[in-house]
Length: 127
View 1 (cartoon, rainbow, N blue to C red):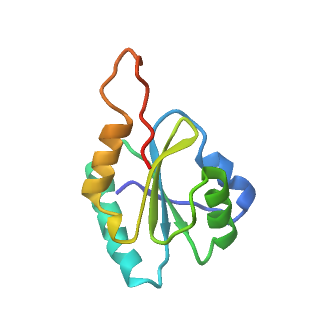
View 2 (cartoon, rainbow, N blue to C red):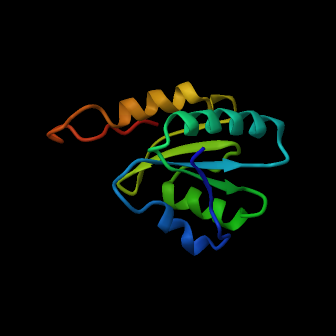
View 3 (tube, rainbow, N blue to C red):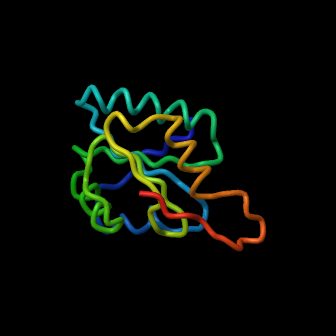
């Protein structure tokens, strides 16, 4: 499994999660919520099947300020559970609650980063 727990709660570190060209997922998770537990299972299965896509877990309770800063930096309203697909430092897609499924993540990844070896069309923004 390639889920990396973000080691800091400092909101100033939110920008570091957004740096880089490669796609990555930010998963906002509440360890006390049953819906979030189900989403965690879905994200874990996705991570197992796609070890090349880093997944960063933010605990919305223990890392509340970081979670809120990410909402500001990404211009997405806060939700939990929530998964956000990021590439080139910007968000491409987000899902929350029951919409957090491995299939939805795969679909978003395919649509946001189409096979375009020449880079002519670039990624499509999906919200």
